[in-house]
Image: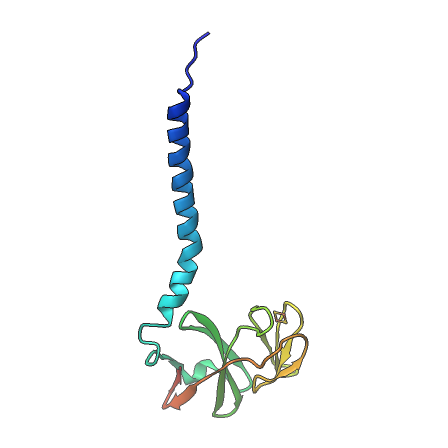
Amino acid sequence: MANDSLPPNQRRFFLTIVLGGLSAVLAAAAGWPVFRFLSSGSAGADVETVEIPRDSVEVGGAHFLTYRGRPVVVLQKAAGEFVAFSAVCTHLGCIVKWVPDPGEFLCPCHAGRFSTDGTVLGGPPPKPLEPIPVVLAGDLLRIG
Ligand code: FES
């Protein structure tokens, strides 16, 4: 019977290399979101804006977009009256949806409800939606 297994010291070396490589991959995977979070807030954080056409948000309607890597919703409450919020629910971070009738934001995860000014109407969210600056500049909405 042929013995084709490695000697114990070579097996140990092989396992050390494999486990070390696996540990490095897991550490990189775990650290990447932290690196992205820290780096997104440092470069140009004060000047970054997003522009969208004014008519992409109808009266009484909402428009969702990504601003600085986060979901944001722009709402036209009445003709020419725009507000914007982070679309991230303040309870556990689900993305809220706009419900035109009755005109409020609903979190699909635990039924949190927010008004058109971002305040909590019901459910478990502890805080209002985070407001985001929005300015009407001609035919554009400047967010941020
Ligand atoms: S995550 Fe929105 S209500 Fe729980």
